[in-house]
Length: 429
Image (cartoon, helix red, strand yellow):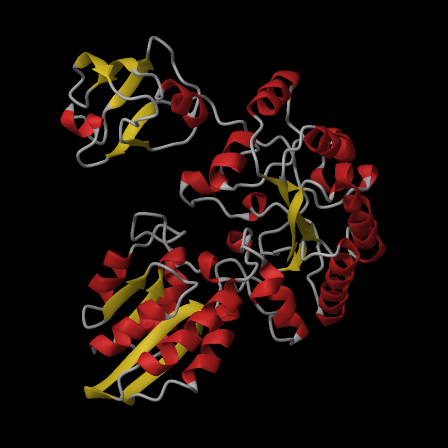
């Protein structure tokens, strides 16, 4: 991998040097940083020798004098400049391994790199760590890491991850505890494997790590139609057990640490808890607390809707079937004269009917939903799209759909945890 510049901050040192996106940093003070961590230390120096290779291919050396800790104003395409540590596990629940061929290449990449865990919040199993990895991690002392625990039973974890190194989870957690490295832990719950008594065992073992355990997310396994292993999905009985067990764990720990993901509450038929349950929403990207944020934001928006539209309008929100249940509740409380607000839960035919999250809706599934609805104005959450593009998981683009349906106006909302963007769209009609 290379140190490719993705953005340059205006009025920064890099901006004044006329550096731009696409330029490559060859070295900093004659050193080649392995990642953002190395770069952040080198960037602090008061004198910097910066070796740049421009997009044109021309190379240039810059001698820079600056204040200590003053940044250069550079962002990069990747947080890791050397090889991202790949995942050697063959987890029975891995979603990457249950995708069909033909999707974009990035969807088949499995990383297990503690640097990305620290820098970007991806989950690391710690099973692929070599001695030199541990040495650097412990010397750098990052907090917090996002750790995929799943179970503390050594034999069961080795079986679930299909890696004998996975059995050392308690030893690995102890290393982190001894060095006071905080973690956000994750359990992907697979019925018949790490639920029931095994889940209770995991909770009991994790009590030993209260000092470093900032949060613990329990999420249900996702089962697509392409999965070879026959895994059960979570039902109401299991969902109730998980929610109750997490509450009991928190009472014993005397603080809210364990959090069942939103999907458990939807399956159980219970209302999601209040904000206190989720703390600082550290595991929001794992579907833990999204509904609470959305419901709270809708409450703020309720009184800000205009009373009537200048002319009648039909507005269709296209989202995953899971999120659609929440938006249906909001629909009943949006009293805007002349507005026909429709919530369309997109059926996931691509991955199968057991997958209902918004982020896995494909372009073709969206088109199928549009065919069945009288869509005039469509709202689409950006979580369906590849970051920074208009491309869905299956390679179909918004621009492709616009060509097929030129009369439909599309609105892309960036923050799917807030209702304010939708409110602004409604008030603009």
